[in-house]
Amino acid sequence: MSQNPRDWRIAKSLSQATVARAAGITGSNPARTYDRYERGQYLCPTQIVENVRRLSDGAVDAMSWHKVRLAYLAAAGGENSIFTEAADAGADS
Image: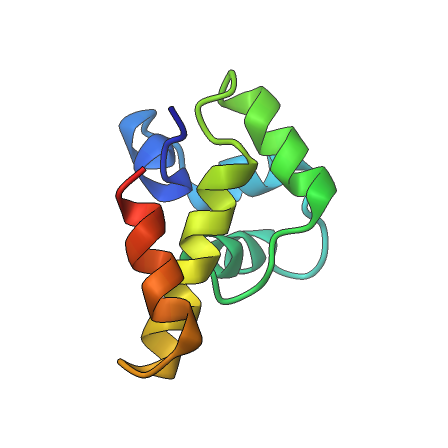
C-alpha cells in the first residue's frame, strides 16, 4: 500500500533537507525543491521517485506521488477542476 511522502517522512522523523539530499536533489535549496514535490506543486522526476521508493523500502511509490500531484491540481483548479474527480477516486485506493 502506497504511503503519502510527507506522512512517511514525518513518521520516520526525517527533515525535508535530509530526504532531499538522500534522494539526490541538488541545487541552491534541495529542501525547498523537495517540499514542492511533496506538496504536488512540482511534478516529481522519475529518478527522485525511484530514489525515495528505495529510501522508504517501497512505502512511498510512484502512486504515492501521483496521488499527491492529483490532489494539488484538484485544489488549485477548484471544485470544477477536471482533476477533482480523479483525486477523489485516488483517495479511495
